Length: 309
Image (cartoon, rainbow, N blue to C red):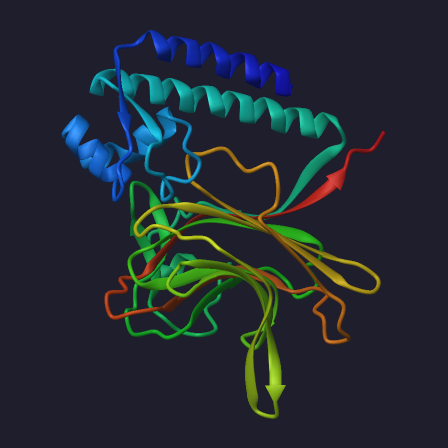
């Protein structure tokens, strides 16, 4: 299957070379937005330019790096072709994974399309306030829009849910942080995959009792990961319960791109106070005065199960 992906991508790359192109040498202080504005007269085309050049991290380009700049129409056509091709390869790889012995059992799924107000969200509860509702962002989404709410959660499921994957699409509107819950037993007892430092870090955190009457976070693992304002990302958080520990794995990727083949973060909790089951959900917090809320979509909770022979 990997060979098929390589063949398809090589075919596409060959097609790209045929198009009329210019070769730009990155200068000190350049950004992809600046390059797109100066060479394509449209700064908003920087994501397409990154994808066209297979730049995995658009925030990091180096002086003397070569950037291929095609004619604008050709750029849009080829990037669209590449996205469709990547989606096909991704679908085939997922099917192959299933054939190798993995299937999913869905515990809960909600795309919010059948809901028009918070009163319709009967499966959800909101234990820590905020202004939760249904809004339109191309489609209906769950939104927390209270700019003054310090800490807001929305939850589904049962306390005996264990060994599952929680996945959600989210978009942070300006200066806030957000993420997903797993093994939620109370506002003060849960695991979460979250951004931090106004979405500049990605963390696996454990909410715990620090001392009598005071709770805080233990950060089991973290990496630098800068999420852009007003852009949709997919968060996936897998938590499994074992006899002596709880194991946590996480990945985040931009919506519209292929799911990474490896986990970005992994951690384990071997303490006697580890959580072994609990509800799932989403979470957001104000991170600055320009915070305009967080939107969530396509929320799923599922188990990975072996296929019976």
